[in-house]
Image (cartoon, rainbow, N blue to C red; front, side, top):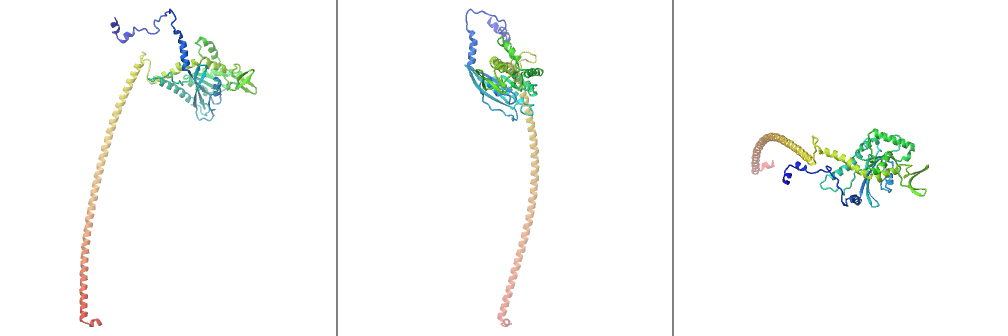
Length: 444
């Protein structure tokens, strides 16, 4: 019977395997087993490993981004104040290790230095989008490695984007709408009205309504606090209605009554940061840190990163289904892509071979032509050399003839001169002899 069960094809043998969720039965336990401690085990493991949370602060220079971060986490983060003279948008990332009770948090704050300071703001959003995609790409590359160390990998993906809106009291700027529209599919956007004490309460209410209306009409998807969990559904549903949050930040503590509280002192009065009648800072802190921090992390991974990963793998040629909409395994996709790549490689190799042969032929023809020209030039030079040599030989012969003739003339001249000398000498001797014989010639 066992041999018969194993004799079929793999597809036939898989039919005997019960898939998860199909025909699953609930079985009562006769006693305590112990797997009810799994949540505690998960908590202990998570606490020992620590957590990470990455916040992106987007907004124009001078809206109090750094001050709000200091106020949110009740500390003083190091940082240099930004100026309005930046030639472009730069993203500055700083990571801090925080400890509260026995829970460790690796917090990364990314600020957009120079955002909105340029005259031409058309491409101000691009460095932000590129930065977010770069963090997704780094995580994807780590995930695709053969030896992965994701449990120790520092996850730099942005979990929350606090978008700071200037308290103009009128409407959103086109820069804000364009930037949020470009970011809403890549990050969890939480819009906040910065320095909300700059406008009155009635203007603030109208401003919130105007912002919400413009976000909806322009199709900008901001982060909605989840309401599927019964334990936080009520408070999250209430807080969704308060978006965008109108916040005030301050690290200065003033004595109000008998307590020291974070506040801002003005000539006309005091604005308390943690007073919900003054601003929405407490609401932001509750929603961002105390209630929905883990959901922001989960949404980043399950929604935004998965979207980036799917698009990236599709660009690389990986798909879940074949052209007939049938399931397509990763191995089959890889084999198909590999065969396609090999086919393209062979095609390119053949094209390169043909191109190489053609280039060799062209080069041979060029070399033959050059060789022919060299031979012709050599023949011309050889003939010219022979002609010059003949001319030189003729000239040499002519010169030799002239030299011989000159020598002959010289010899003849010398002979004549010697003969003349001999004749003159004999006459002188004869005259002397005559004088000697005839003394009268001397007296004359």
